[in-house]
Length: 490
Image (cartoon, rainbow, N blue to C red):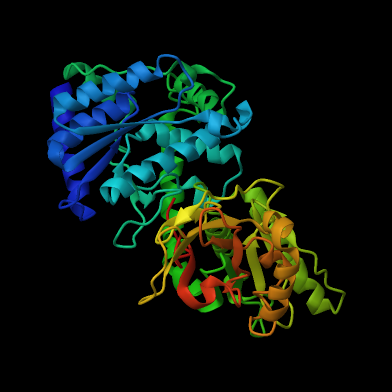
């Protein structure tokens, strides 16, 4: 029985690889050592061949035995003929988060390391061992967070790899989840039949972590066919939500093309405020479409790897609907911004429509980057890709380095220069670009010509600073990590 399941899984993964046109590409396997990822490595090695795979194990360093387990994974990868890398997280370099945020921060750092491996080997696709049980957990997790249709449609087969830099072809690597149609029990049986050793992470039983608690609820409910919390019931509702989302998304992309302006260099989206004689703008006239449009915009701006909660979207919706009701009634209109889900929404004025930008960061939330060499690309604040390089034909010393600051950090160094640069920018920039809420979340770049020199201001508020090295000899590019596509899959 297990042999049949393994054969079916191999054929299934082969079909997915061909359908996604990844057959001629090397694939990165995320292998933690659990049964699902070890089964993935076994299946992938037979589906595409071991030479077409690289495996990475991210050792979080939370448990004493994790290093031993990562080494054991390496030995099994060697047995399969798959190249293997171990990346160990060093927590002494960063402030360890409280237990409530530990999962979130560890996940972000794990994906960052996986993205680094993609950069090293120029890999464009990462295969993970997410299975149907994970899908059910994700649905329930988003349900209790009051997600809308966007979130309740669950994990997709393919999505962009969070916190990753683009590859040489300028495309961001993707995550592919080829085992979503298989349950954990099947993956266990494949491991047992293949003599594959796996490890159970004891922290997965710690119900202080919300996902573990939900996993336990689903596991207990699976013994009761009538329970609405068993995996089968949850997955049926998720599939229905996915169908609703696909119907809405068909028209949403063209609607946003007409009514949304994406400023990829600033990480800002502007939605049209004109109603064309109707009660609401076209993108906001239907409640379901409005919710999905806002979810897309908010998700694009905050760059989180999960959809926004429905409660947050409702805060934006409430201001939008009340704005137009007040305008129709001739009443005074509130111009107070709304900030939630890491995003600030600014009401329209005669100069701009509805503006969405990153919520102003907390003190020290965004770290100053280390000195970077010319030609390097940095992912700043998890949302903007920044590259500084010499202009064509310019000869720049190799010792030149650059850094990126938040506005608050930069103000401590160059307050007078920044204020003067902002005054100059107001003459040439669009009013929407110069809104204080937008300016407050833009990167400030400095350049250091030699190692012992003081850094000088080079780029601020979306433009190069006059009389700086950047004005004559450097090209500085800033662009959103998510490109310009607002209707993205999660």
